[in-house]
Image (cartoon, rainbow, N blue to C red; front, side, top):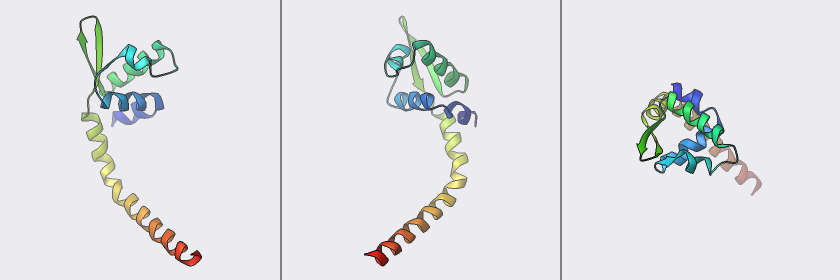
Length: 104
């Protein structure tokens, strides 16, 4: 559940999305943001500390990759609430169709 804290920041969520596509260096990640490289490095540190990213050295570069295990734990926790949202969204869909018929 530590993933919630790390993913609270939109920049960190974007980093996770980028790493879901494959390994990237800190420089490659920083190039995708308007913030400074040190700021991106701080976000990467938080993600590492929360177990969401892993690193490996590739010569002089450090490559970052996504560790999906904390996300699986988060998904498991959220699964308890999916039924609630599914029921609400189904009810909304029914109501929208009913109103379209009334106005159409």
